[in-house]
Image (cartoon, rainbow, N blue to C red; front, side, top):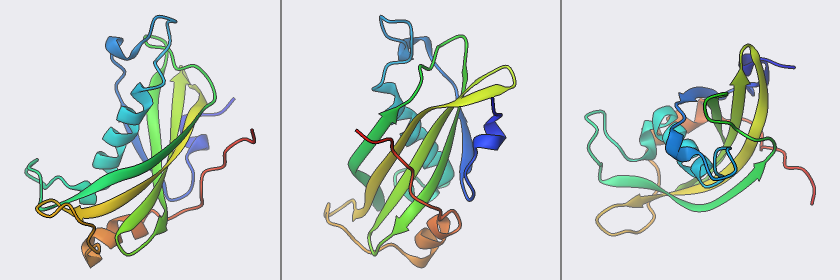
Length: 155
C-alpha cells in the first residue's frame, strides 16, 4: 500500500477535506455526487484565482465549470477514511484552465486513490457573464502547479 504523500503527483497541491455524515448514502459509502463538492472545495483552496478574494467576498471575475469527468476507483467510507484531494492544472488557455484532481482515501497510514477527475474551467466577468482572459497573476497561480493529465482507465 501507499501513503498519501506517495500518491501525490508532482506539482499537485494537497488539500485535506473533512467528510460529513451527510456525504454518506444509503449504501454506507460517500455518495458519488459529493466528490464534485470535494473537488470544488479543493479548487478554491488551492487556486484563489477561482473567484473569491482574500476577504472571502466574490470578485468581479469567477472561474466557472464547463465540464467535469470523474472516475470512481474505490469506496470512500465516512468514519473510516480521511480524505485528501491532490489538485493541479494540466492545460492553461487564454481564458480557460483544465484541472486534475485525485481523491485519496486514507485509513491509518495506508492510502489509495478513491477517484480521479478532470475539469475544464473558464474565467468569466461576473457582470457580463462572458469569458475574459486571465490576468498574469491568475495565470501564475496555475502555472506554478502545471502537470500532466490524469489517466483514466479504459471503458
